[in-house]
Image (cartoon, rainbow, N blue to C red):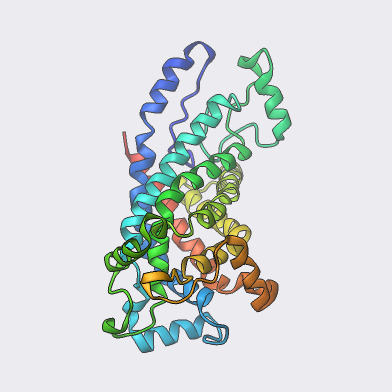
Length: 345
């Protein structure tokens, strides 16, 4: 059984228009499967995310580490506090994963058909894995494209598709993550002592005092962070291919291990940019909101402030719970996503 369910029906030279039209008509599958992926990701990963955000944004010394952060959170606020701010991503991640994984499937197909001249775009398959970008372009530009085009989309094609998918989903992710982050750093156990009573209240207050621009505070930082999806989906293809060729694991098992490991590779390359993003999203907006004075007018200001406070180590604060979360949350999300993809007609 193949490691994915992406529709990668071979496209021969004489039937390309018909087959391409048939493939594009099935693009809906990625968007539907992404909804279920988002639900799985939130259920497994949100407690880890709450601890990560608290470690990223609190003053140095408040928590000695992730274990103390978990212990104090549960003791002072109860177990449910680990799911603070869960409502926005429960709704948001359903849309976010739908848009991210749905658009990723579309971009993979477009990259395969129009850039690399590949006949399929399923992760984990391919005879073009060992070819460099220049060699692939040479194949694509060759006059005898029917015999020289690569059979499968190479890892770099999956990575570029990841960049475009990251940019696309950022327009949904930015406001969702903005509201979520502000709710997660409210430490009062009593709701009456919190600035925001919930996600709707938070969104309403931000919009009232700062408009759409305030709601989308941190959009550029989100796009920088999600541009590094290149490493996630490029490595997912490499790992899926290796497991498919070198092991006898079932398709769900390959999805699980490749999904979890590729997510960890992504976080190793992107965590500093995520930390800067969180600093920007939890920075006071000021003005009529009355939450304090704004510190970071630009991405660069936040990045420099982190270094001044804690040096290079500051960019990795809170990394452990994030890294621990990355594998189970994304492994289950990919299992669910690919399983639904295989089920849909």
